[in-house]
Structure formats: C-alpha cells, structure tokens
Image 1: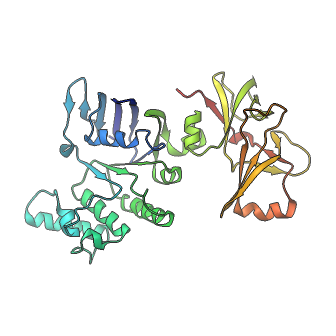
Image 2 (image 1 turned 135 degrees about the vertical axis):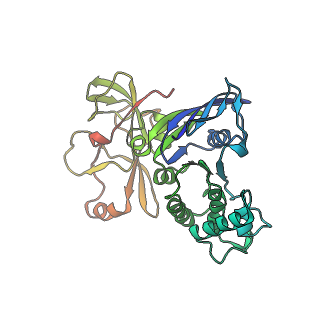
Image 3 (image 1 turned 180 degrees about the horizontal axis):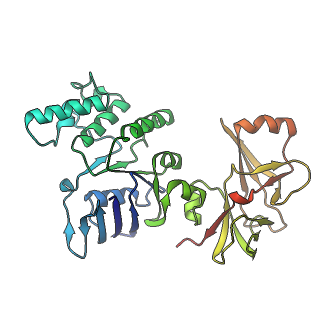
Length: 355
C-alpha cells in the first residue's frame, strides 16, 4: 500500500526527474518556487503526462510509459485541493459537496449530510463560497474531496496566500480533519515549518531533481547533502579538509572541529544551523570560534548576528549566522556578548556532494 513515483519529464529547458516510494499517510514535498513540486503533483493526478517512468497508487499502476498505461485523471481516485480551493462560486456548500457524487438521490443526500457534520459545516449548507471565511472554504473544499473517498489527496500550497496566524490555524484544522483519512495526503510547500508539522515522510526537491527522501524528522536532523540542508533551513556551510575519523578543518571558518559521527571519505562540507550555537564566556573551549560581529539585525522573536570567520584569509568567505532566540536575550544583557561560540559535536552536519 502507498505511493510509488519514478518519473521524468522535459519542459523546454526544465527537466523533472523525481523518484520516491512511501507508505506514509502524510507526505511532504519541500523545495523552492519553480523546482517542480506542482508539476510532480499534476503528474500524479494525471493532469500532466510524464515522458517516461511509472506511478503506482496502492500497488495499482496508473502510469507506465513502457506498458503504455495512462489512467485518466477522473479514474485515479485523487482529490486535488488548489490554493484557492476551486469551489464552484455559484453553487451552495451542499451542492459543491454533492458535485461528482454517484448513486441515488437519497444516497447523495445522506453522504452530503455526513460530510457537513464531519467538517463542521452545519448552518452553512445554503451559503455560496463567497459568503464563507477562509477556514470555512477550506472545510467545504475538503468535504467535497472526501465525499467520494479518494485514495490520494493532493494539497498544492493551500495556505500560501494566507497570513501567518490564519495559515497556522487552518493547517492545524486540516491535520485534525485528516486524522480519520485512510489514504495518502501529499502537500507541497516552500515553507519548511509547515512541511515539518504536516509530513511523516519528506521529499526534498531542487531544480527538478530529488535531493533527498525519507522520514521528515530524520532528514531535518541529518539532511546528508548541502541542497537538502539549505532547504531545511541551515544557514552556515564550510568546505572541509578531513584530518581523521572525527576531526576536520573547516576551511571557510578557519577553525578545527571535532564531530561525533565518523567522517567518511566522501564528506566534502559541513553545515551548522544558526540557532544551535552555545555562547561561551571566558576561556576558549573545544569547537569554538571567536565572536567578531560584522553586523546584526533585531527581529520580534530573535536577534541575528553575522560573524566574521577566523584566520587571515577572509576573501571569499561568508559571514557566520548566529540566531539568538528571545528567551536568551536576558542572559546576553547580563553577561554581554560572549567571547566565543561553540559548535556542539552532535549538531554538526556532515554533507556529501549534491548530485
């Protein structure tokens, strides 16, 4: 059971090459705008036809270029939730939910009533989409999709046009509504926090290619490649020279570091997340870099510092980002700027070359 995708498609200068297999109930697709996320969803839905490859839904082949299988979109049992929810503007909530349902008039009426109750739309049955709030529109659109029990629900950046407060609230509502869903829900987004909360498995894409795939929390903890680390929010990167199994020279930071994991021969870079630094006052300890502030920015919930790397050769090197969360501001006021920042061994990301 689950979803298996292995497809390629060329559109002008753009090349899509995506492969993953998952039995998870919630899958996230993370990547920058224009990386092929929506094209991947449309290929799964049958709206776009790949040039080659296979797509299996619950072990049923819906696309196979070699066997010339291409099941039409309406027969794939897929629900597609667009950014604007795509409700019929001149139809009431109950008529929107009933659209596409099969069966007798009585069976359709019962199904609509069931969906209205499940998605908390009581009292809104006779309203038009334009008379609903954003959350009510989302619930109505999901009710219409779930009414015909799809095997897969595709969510194409459904919250991207909303402000942060409403986006967080509606995403939480959606996750609650999907709890009883027995199929697969796939959401694409360029928002890593949104994807982290939503997905069990994660596909990371960059320029049409699969960069990484696996359990969401595992990938955030150990992304494996620079592109994956960058897309999961890592700000600091350095080329390395491997000294031994657990020591390296961070060439772009001018310091030697010890790491907890074994440094394999094909590791070429390291990454470090900006909020993982440990401030050190007084004597220098292991895995420390001297604090030399090149710039700073104060935001509502954190302060961002940009530090100059150590060593004499600074040309071509990027500043090191240190993000200080608000709950640590008071300590900084009391003690002043730290003398050093420490890299905890188990938070240093060992990265291999991007393919």
